Length: 283
Image 1 (cartoon, helix red, strand yellow):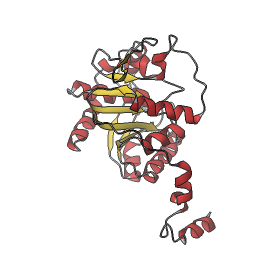
Image 2 (cartoon, helix red, strand yellow):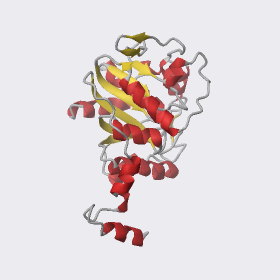
Image 3 (cartoon, one colour):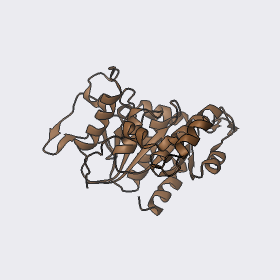
């Protein structure tokens, strides 16, 4: 590895930069820019290094937090093969309509607009068996061919990892920044650092971090339990240099309301800091 780095370090084309950003690799991985649009002000991707950390739940909670503050909000479900946004928001599939400006995004009770491949299916357990380029292409279509109307914020729920879809979104769409979700386990923290490295490599701003499932409060006695170990958010924030926007509990109500399609109705007081931070950045 050292030889590889020193060889690339002497490359005159990159002025001594690491092999990770070599022009040959950039050419192989570069995705074309998506069609720009003026009706969506701020696009924020929500990603995680691994699955199972509650990223989609956090996406909906972030979206509903901003909607309750009076902003016009949309959610684009980028997890094409494992979509959960329609279920969490109580939206049924098989009822898609097209208008003069493209596909009409269904709205929730709170007024959040959403688009997901699962909205095209009558049965929500329909399997999508596609390879990477098709998945990435579908996400770009949701950006370009959906009539989102005037939005203050569009949150994109990315699939876990650093594969084709996150790569396409980070390279193609006009992101204001990324929110990275993780849970306290050492494994999750190790993998989330891969997501941090990816965003840095692609020069995409990281807005901040959300630590999910950090603790559990006993409903009977109020004792705080740490099912995945003590919260590590502050440590990860210090190691990565990005602010910790929220520390969320392992909350049974999230599951209950999510299964009922009413997750947007829950109040997540821990996300007030996130909302204020976004407003302070004028995002």
